[in-house]
Each structure stands twice: as structure tokens, then as C-alpha cells.
Length: 65
Picture 1 (tube, rainbow, N blue to C red):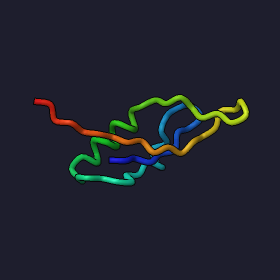
Picture 2 (picture 1 turned 90 degrees about the horizontal axis):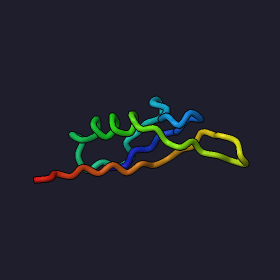
Picture 3 (picture 1 turned 90 degrees about the vertical axis):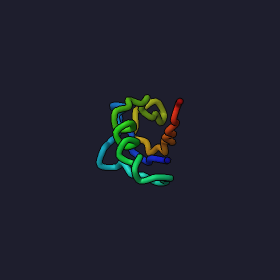
Picture 4 (picture 1 turned 60 degrees about the horizontal axis):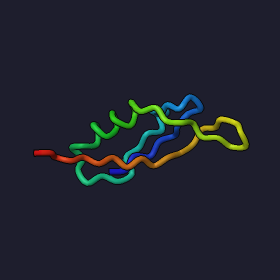
């Protein structure tokens, strides 16, 4: 699964921009959204300034027995 989202200058995902780009199973989409929305990222930088940045975050689910 791949989620696309804008990371703000504070390093947090801007939830209004979060979108599932690719999904193998719709049943996992909400869990993937929740996982990405709870992350904190290192903000992007351009010429030393902190900037918003669009990322594509892969999310992988694994069943462990």
C-alpha cells in the first residue's frame, strides 16, 4: 500500500492531504491512514529553510505466526 501526504514544517502529516495512492486490500486502508497520520517526520529543507514536502510512504502489513 502507498500513502501520499504533505509533511508540514513541523514534521507532522497534514491530514487533509493524506491519500491512498495504491492499495492491495481496502480493508487495510484505514489502518494505514492511522499509522501514517501518527508519525512524525523530519521536515523538508530547501536552502536551509524548513519547507512543506509531498511524500509517498509505503505501508506494509505482515502476518506473523
